[in-house]
Image (cartoon, rainbow, N blue to C red; front, side, top):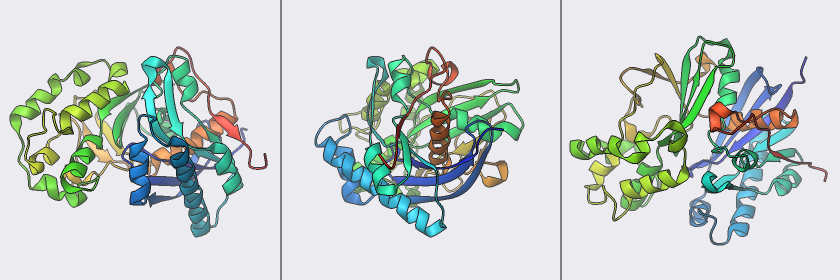
Length: 356
């Protein structure tokens, strides 16, 4: 029988909300038992410092240290509140640059420093090996989705919504898995809210609720090249950045919209060939999408992921990197040709020992 380990996962996503902390007990294969979770919002000053180094420019080293210290404080608070410890931390860090076409990806976060500050071994740098081998470096949650869904009816699709959104499809056949980034999640609307409200979120959907749907612009969105591309192409960060500028930029296609109307428009989703679509991700209930949080194509029956289905939607990404940390320790693949487009199943991650 494979060894079960307690692992803490840390996630800082493109929405720049804060740090998600979660603990699971897992063998890194098909056994994963979730525990408590915590979200620690970023202080406004740190959020803006992070935003300023996106693209890998500016005082990255200084911001990386501040980011790492914030993660260490989040782990200490989590451990204190729940009285738990772990054998390893899966530390995603924060993505400041992602150019898979150039075989480059950069998640800032000092694994060695985090190991020293927490006294726990740290696995980080999950995406680099995949990108260096020709993969897209995303999405990285599908193998954890598959582990969680081992006892659920299939076929099954899981939509994970953050700043960027991705889908994992799990077929009825053993090992049948397909995953890809679907493109923008909440990031463009967060950009819009920051521009018009001075804060990077539309709290309680106030901006969107006051707006009207602009049917002409909404109809134009699916004609964007981003949405007409194959799944592997949608993941490319260059396309995503162009779309963000097109949507919310001052000179963009929607730049002249009333601030309420721009906050309420969303791209239509493509239909998906599966009748069940659990929604996961810390931003699966975006306030700007309405009180019921419904997204998805009419052909689907979207449901919020909940513990009753074996999924904790708010903590899922942090849990995933705890799971991937254990897989890294076991020398198991973190990504597959059918999840990131990499040529072969790819291991990854770098280990930093607490006592080193």
